[in-house]
Length: 116
Image (cartoon, rainbow, N blue to C red; front, top):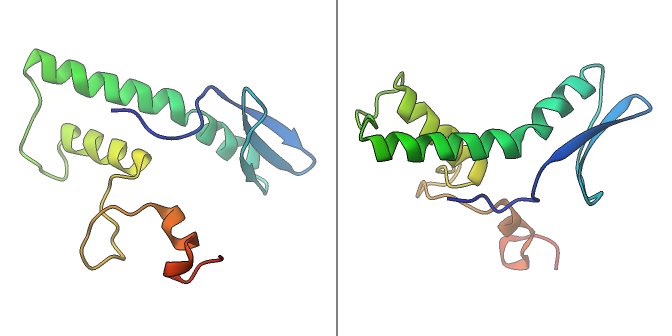
């Protein structure tokens, strides 16, 4: 399982009243405005490492044969899978009647009313 995002690590830079999150190559990941911008930017910058650890942990639990399959909302395994799905874009889209995961960039395609 590997997310298709700009590879980490990501770093935080303070820019006037805002914070920026950038990849090592300088690619801009996010501009986070406001009083809590730096704190929120730090959380965003941690995503690649947190996702890698979560995926690795899920794999190890499977190898050990101790993955819970109950699917309960309070189950840690269910919550771990949901967090990974949210980060990788494989979670169902609640605004789509079919419930399948959507690529947000699809909205930019002309057939979806986006820019041409």
